[in-house]
Structure formats: C-alpha cells, structure tokens
Length: 229
Image: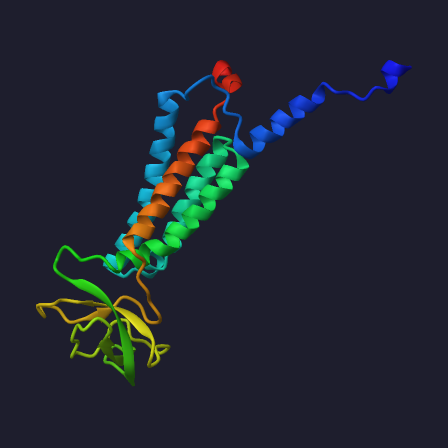
C-alpha cells in the first residue's frame, strides 16, 4: 500500500532535462564542443548577419525601397531563424537571435547612409526648409522640389528633386547624398525623417547576432541524432 501511494520520482529528472533542452538546447557533448559544430554556428552567423547588412547597404546604394526600408533584411533574419528551428536549437536562443536579427535589419540601412561612398559621394542629414511644386511633368508624374539646409555646415544650393515627395513637409530631415566636388546633383535617399546609426552600434549588433547563432547551433547538438545518422 505504501509503495502504491508513493508518488513517482523517477520521471522528474527526465522532465527537467527535457524542458532545459527545449528552452536552451540539449548540448549533448562532453567537454568542449566539436570544432565542426562551432564552425557550423560561425558559418550560420556570418551568412545571416552578412546578408542582413548586405541588403541594407545595397538598398542604400541603389535606392530600391524594399531593400532600403529593411524589409529584405527582415526576410534574411527570418531565414536565419528558420534554420535554427530546423536544427532544433533552444527556443530561448532562437528568440534572442530573432530579436537581434530584426534590430540589425532595421538599423543596417540607416547605418549605411552614414558611410563615405567609394565614388566620393557622401550622405548627410539635412532639414527641409520649403517644398515647392505639385505640377505635372512630361511623363505625367508630379514633381516636387525641396530646399534643404545642411545640419553639419555642408552648403547645398541646389534644390532636391529625387526623394522629395507629396508627404515631405518643412522640418523633415532627409538623408541627402551629395558630391563635395559637384559632379552629380544631390538627391535624397527617402522622403521623410531619416537618421543615421553609428557603425559601432551596428557592429555590436552583428557581433551579438553571430555569438547567438554560434551558441544556438552548438547547444542544439544531440548525441542520439548523431548516433542514428
């Protein structure tokens, strides 16, 4: 009777280990993790962070809205998260990588706007002082011209057409691309408020994302799966 009334104690350690493995990953290895496993995590992190930052830089260079807005970077971050889910990484680590990936995707285009371009062009935030236009061009589109004032002392005497739109208002800040030698006319990357993100912050996010990927992949290792494979 006493044995029948005694609660089962054996399954509790198994349940705790299962929950720990589900949340943080099983990490079924002895001592230091295998080098190939660390390399797999580094590769996933480098490809993930590199693609997220890469599409942001390409969007800044080309002006493609889906790239410059960070949407393509979010897709890359989603692909990285799906890879970690596929290898059955710990849910907590997958969530951390997802948050870091979203932050990196949203800030990469803004950080790219502060880079000095290889062709000599520079990017600087400038304040819109007035917006003129609204008339139709020969192609049937509406043309707007924005007068801007540099915030860092850079003189801009030409009114901005590209990037100046119907929703632009005086006081808005535009990320304006200009050539100090005047070889090409200045243009705005996007209509509306813009801000640059320090490159050190972007590098810190990328490093954190890389570390999270390595930790998630390493802790996802299962001896049972390796043995059956």
